[in-house]
Every structure is written in structure tokens, then in C-alpha cells.
Length: 385
Image (cartoon, rainbow, N blue to C red; front, side, top):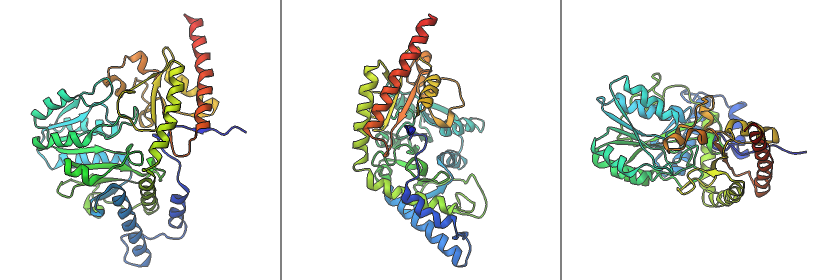
């Protein structure tokens, strides 16, 4: 019997068995609130502390720099809105290819007197050097540039960008949700370069949904989004999701262990995939830029991406037509538009994002299914011309 093949790991990843095993006791019997003074509460607090240490160790950070949140979206909002709340309205700059959970809170600040500037990218999706230099001359107060793009996989040289921004006095944030586990991510080195805050999330590294973190230089003052009992150093009140946080800690530990060898294997699989895509006539976006080793974003002329994704789903292959978090938006990808891709090409975009469980046989099966599906769709297109 044919088993469906999951090729959408940038959207979310399957739960690692070791992560599940660590979480289960906290879903069955261990019920303490980490703020309680009794034994149940103390055990929950210890579990959170241990998870915080594991996440910090995976990122080269100190445990006191790790602020747990419910997800990457909340962590990004916490930094952007929280940092802005303690400043006089000024210039806020974000790259044009950021995730909506950075772009939208940034846009909300405009109504509070902030000026928003989107940093241009080149045709390969990298921050455009001249535009960035001109931005820094305007002395932005806040800058956010993601470490790796969720659609194209393009990697930004965040350390260099942050170092350039230091002279302007900007507070610099990077969304590293897609990078953790696929690239070495060292907050201490990034912090030394000028990065003040970093966002990471559990469900992108074979951990559970519902746990993420803002890794924050303690010299940066934030106003909390959620006021209450003062949890997470007063930055994120609310009873902690102990099972998810415990799972996050184990997932981060495993990701740090695997990052030495997993990217190489994923890159080999992607090379096989893209050799097949090229043979079929696909256009691969950002192919000349440094990219995550697991991500390939492509389109075929005159084939709608949503249609192709639906056809492939029926063939047993789970891929994406863009970012899962904004899939309800029928407009062409804002990432591809920022890269100057024509709308008729951008509407055909399909993303394959590989994971640790994929193998060569699955990639070959996918190419075969894609060949047949694209052939049928091209035949239909030819009949209507």
C-alpha cells in the first residue's frame, strides 16, 4: 500500500518519538502549575528550568535570555511591539520578505506614529546592499531581518547586517524559526555582532506546536504583550504550557546534536530533487543564493501552483504553494513579488521542504509523480490555447 509522503517540513514537522516520550508524563499524571509551592508545582518548575537550559544550550545563549512564548508569531510580536512601546515613535525597518507575523505588527505601529520602511531585496531574495546602506543613514530605531526565509529558504547574512546597524544605534531582531536545526545558530556570536533578539519555535524542529522562545539580550527593555502574574521575567504572563515546553527542550537538544550531519544529507536530497526539476523545465527561485539545505521553491510556466499542489496531494505528496500561515491569501507570494518575479510566474510557485524522515526513494517517487502531473496539466493548457 502506498504511503503518503510528507514534503512540507517548513510548515511544521512530525513529533520526534523522544520528544513525545518526554512530554507524556506531563500529559498524564504530572499536573502541577509551575507557580504552585507544593511538590507538584516544584516539579513543574524544575521541568521548565531544565527545558530552558536545553534551549539555551542549543542556541549558545544563557538560560536567563530565553523567554518562552506560545509560538513564533507571539515571539515576533513581543519583540516588535514590546520594544517599540518603550521608545519614542521613530523609524522601524523590516525586510520585504519577512513572515506576516513581522510585517503585520510592524504595520500596526504606523498607527502609533512609527514610520515603516521595507528593506528591498535583490532578484535572489537577499537584502539589497545599497538600499540597506541608505536605510542606516536614516538611523532606524528597530530593524528586523529574518535569518532564513520560510518560502525560498534564502539565508541572510544577519551577523553582517547587524554589525552594520550598530553604528545607527538600532535594536536588531532576527526571526530564526526556519534556521534552527538546519543551520548552526549561535546567539552569543550573533549577539556580539549586534543581534539583540532571536525568535525560534519548537514545531519546526520536530517538537510540539504551542511552544517557542524569544532569545533576548537582557539589556533590551520590552513591554509585555500579556500582563498578569509576571511569568517569564514579567515579559509573558500566563500559566506555562509545561508539556510543550518540556518537548521544546528535548527537540532543541536533538536539533543541536543533528545539525552537524543532517544539513549535508538534506542538501544531497535537494540536489537530486532539483536535478529532476530542472529536467522537467521548472524555474527554481533563488537558486544562486545561499539557501537552507532542505528547501526548493519552483514554478512551471502556465501552471497554477494551487492546482499543482492539489493534484500532487491526490497523488500522495504533501507540498505547499507558499507559506502555510498565509495560505488563505490568494494573491501571489509577497516574497516573490519583492524579488521582482512576475505575478503570472509567482502564482505557479510550489515549495518542497524536506525533513529528516525523507529519503532518496521518496524524492524519486515525487519527481515521477510530478512529471506525470505536469504533463497532464500542460496538455490541458495546450488544448485551451
